[in-house]
Amino acid sequence: MTLILGIECSCDETAASVVKDGCEVLSNVVASQDELHIEYGGVVPEIASRAHLERILPVIVESIDIAKISLDEIDAIAVGNRPGLIGSLLVGVAAAKTLAWTLSKPLIAVDHVVAHLCAPALNGAEISYPALGIVVSGGHTSLLLLSDASTAVCLGKTIDDAAGEAFDKAASILGLGWPGGALIDAASKKGAPVHQLPRPKTKGSRPDFSFSGLKTALLYGVRGNPIRKDGKSIFPRAISELSEQEIFDWASSFQEAAVDTIINGIQHALGNNRVLCIVAGGGVLANTLLRKKLSAVAGSYNIPIHLPDIKYCVDNAAMIAGLGYHLF
Image: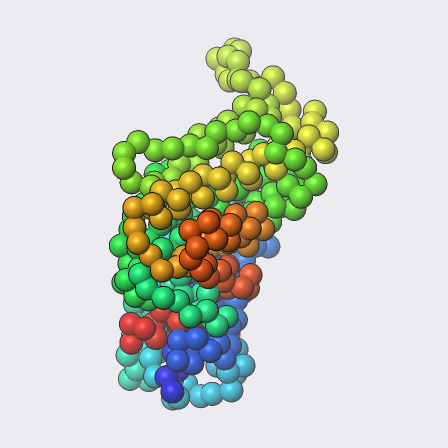
């Protein structure tokens, strides 16, 4: 039996988890900061790092208590050390280093993006390799070729906005609020994709992604092409002029285009790489349309797909501990 304590503070979730043998979650504590950032419509790095400082120790203590173990029983400590907000990462890494030194336990540095692809194993998925990994989150949209749980080669990634970031901006354009992913998903269920929005394609042979043009197309579609007046760009329409149903239809149209863009990249990668399954992770995997279309594309290639439980889509420390186990 191997017990890994995972610590995750890469953005705005302070998280700690104890995982047994890489797949059995004994505790998974996540302290969200949404209430601190909502008035700004996005994560403020300085506020995030200060909140991590306040929450990191209570979260770690709670995760140990829920797991019903002592710190001495931990075999190693895994911490997300890249990529992310530097101030947030510093808090998590400092806490993990201090614990590792104090307890004389191994310290394992974990790549946050690759860790997302360990999330499906936390709900019992048995992943076969090589596998095609797709990470779709607020800060990352990446296609990875996995030769095993801890070895990944990047096949393609976003060249501008991440998918989750684009969902947040779309929600802002439509006046829905923040965080945008769940709000766009909910609004889409009341609308229809009646508007034609682009499915951006990048130049070259790599299955890279681009979402900034889609975001701009939504903005101009909703508010009209800006005109110059008195040296300023002014939109002909305000969001307040749209009916509730029109907002729902624009949300549905955006979601359809964003998900199609992700699926197109996956199909490109599947056409050029032999894999035994698809494994996915990241906050945007909570989107109902994306989950549906991912399952459909896997079925069309006659390969299994492994999706995380909704509770493991958001940034969490269980996935950090899961990957930490394999590295250990």
